[in-house]
Amino acid sequence: MRKIIHIDMDAFFASIEQRDNPDYRGKPLAVGYAGPRGVVAAASYEARQYGVRSAMASKTALRKCPHLIFVMPHFDVYKAVSGQIMEIFHEYTDLVEPLSLDEAFLDVTENHKNIELATQIAREIKQKITERVGLTASAGVSFNKFLAKIASDFNKPNGLYVVHPKDAEQFVEKLEIEKFFGVGKVTAERMHHLGIKTGADLKQWSEDGLVANFGKAGHIYYLNARAIDNRPVEWKRIRKSISSETTFSEDIDKPEYLLPELDKVADDVIKYINKKNFRGRTVTLKIKFADFRIITRSKTFPTHITDYETLRKAGFELLELVDLSPKVRLIGLGVKNIEVETGSSDDTQLLINFDEDDFANRF
Image 1 (cartoon, one colour):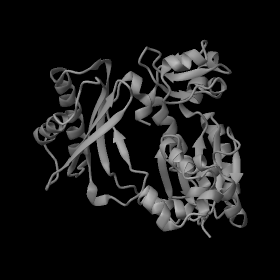
Image 2 (spheres, rainbow, N blue to C red):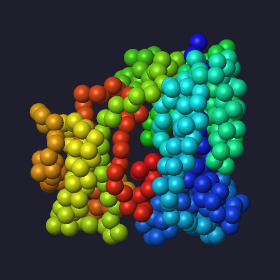
Image 3 (tube, helix red, strand yellow):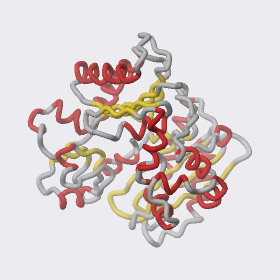
């Protein structure tokens, strides 16, 4: 039986700002840009009590909490702290799969300290994080990634929750469908329409029925409903895509204004492609309109894209296919490596360019 831990830092960005500035402690705080087109990247637990959440428009957050404190992000600090935390993980196992700066899976079935109980390792890691970086983390412990991820959300902040094998199916059956890892708002609404509101409801469906309604993700839902997740902790991740995007201070509907911005993101992407020796054949254009509706347009080439002119031209051609009359808020361009597609929903993507009001798109 595998022993998997999921560690999730508590309000990571906001907690670091409160740690480093005593004036912010105990007060509702948001990391982000407070301007009219700003977005909350992270919210402290004091802010969350007012309904402030990450990815929320700043004006909405201020309406919910008029005395909300906004601070600009310090990504260099966040990355440095994340590096300290990852070092703690590696004291126990080499099988560490980071999901972002503030969370990771650890396979401690065999570990450097020969500790039998994964729960003990989780407690030690939480304690070391507090002692060394002055922050708290929540941990979920179970025998697979699906259950460990969900467990880490219980008893936050500074929580520890264990799902034992004998309790796993009953645990999943009682879960609201929104708690399932990989089930977002749109998918949850579709499931509700089909009468699926809990894990028990999901378990009543056949695998073929779920695939018919949700595509290849249906296979995963079928297994998860039975507390099954055979995915290994991937300590070596294969990058599947590289993209860059930018948000405008004012909405744009004229191609002559969009093309220079598309030039910039294409340049960002091709520089990183060549720096990392990344190889991909599919170009994807991303457009977010003024009403926050998002569309994508893609084109696949017979050979890998390695030069700026090819990427730039592909972006321009894809832009010609888009009706710009609703006005554009954000434009992005990416290159994807379809050869490493696995059918997994947790596609690894690196955003290498962003504006003040689009922090949530990066992490």
